[in-house]
Amino acid sequence: MSCYVPRLRVDLQSWCAWTGTNWDKVRAVTGHSFRMCGMHEDIYTMAANAVLRLITANGIDTRRIGFLALGTESSSDNAVGAVTVCGMVDRELRRRGLPGLPRDLEVPEYKHACLGGMYALTGAARYVQCESGDRTAIVVAADIAEYQRGSSGEQTQGAGAVAMLVERAPALLALDLAHATRSAAYRGPDFRKPVARHHTEGYAPATQRPSDFPVFSGRYSTSAYLDAVTHAVEALWRRLGSEPAEALRDLSGIFMHRPYQRMPLQALSFFYVRALAATHTEREELEELCAVAGVSPEAVVKELDSSPDLFGSVLAGERHPNPYRATVAVGTEVRRRTGFQEFAHTRLDRGAALLAQVGNLYSASLPAALAAGLETALDSGEELVGTSLLTVGYGSGDAALALPVSAVPGWQHAARRIGFARALRFPVDLDQATYEALHDRREVPGLQVQPLQEFVIECTGSEHGPGFQDLAVPYYAYEY
Image (cartoon, rainbow, N blue to C red):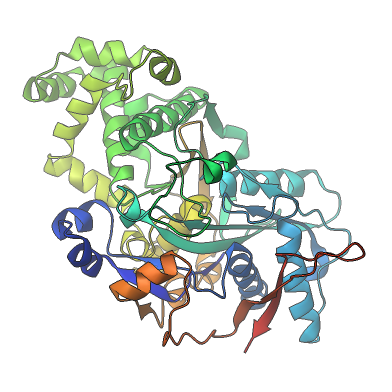
């Protein structure tokens, strides 16, 4: 694995001072800072930076690569995607006198909200399994999370990319595709980016540029998140033939998509309550928690057996459906318990301190959680071989993926080359005026950010004649 994040940083404590927001709440729920792209960057430069670093740091034989996939929801080109990254990396490798990327290369782009990176990873794993010979695959997840200033999502912005090499004999993690489970259900208006919004009156009125701000409803999205990831994880317990409570407690680490810092904790408490309800021998603890939360155990069990139609509720006029009121109430009580806090800390918090500095990375969020968690485990001297690890990916409310993984012997050697903490070095903190100008994509006089050995947008095409056209097509270069 390899990581790249932009140098431009917004400190959330400063942001809270600018906006009059409660810093203690933002620090507890969201994190400490987020990264922004400069005027010279986009998802393709970030992705190419991560891929080039992956290749050079790990001495990858590029002649064996047969598949290079991009997972993103921030494409700025509706025709091509991964081939742009391929072209940038290939040209730079050859400029250095190294073997470039093969011509017989598959270059797909995967899009499904924040699940695109994990879908690309499983697609690459299937390619490696099915391809003859010893071909390998590279997956890169790259995204820019932007929200309108003044919206409830503004503090959860972020930008970055994570690249991964996939091969039959992995050096870091083994993916258990045989036991992977999924869920999918159409959620209608939950976190969408319809292109028509750019031409609709009332969209982003305070922004003077074409933007990629999503259309979202926070409370509805939370219900969708819990419903989607829970169905995927509980399908995994059934596939494994495990008692839910026992299976959950046996996990040594859980890596989840993090739209903000607290969301995985809320999801874990939700899993925990439902696991108690589904396991007969845990009834005493469930009853005690329900008594304090003021709900009946029967209500929790009833929700366990339900199959709510969130989109149907919206169509019926309910804007904030919450079909798991009893479970959520008990989950809130669970999170107050010291025992659960310790349980959650040992399973969720590997890498959390690093993730709190980058913000939401959309498709790259879960890969980043893996990268940060592995690097943290390495630095603390933790041995992960023989432990049970689970990744839980999520794309809007529509889809989720539960994929068991396991560390392979000697994983530490590959973990040393991830470079997550190294990617955070040399940040440039933004003041309010500079942040707002960059958010609006306005030129910022005096902002000196020299690219440090990375890909940049060199120029943008402007021709639109009958014989040749490159209007709005970016041209990329590598800056030293």
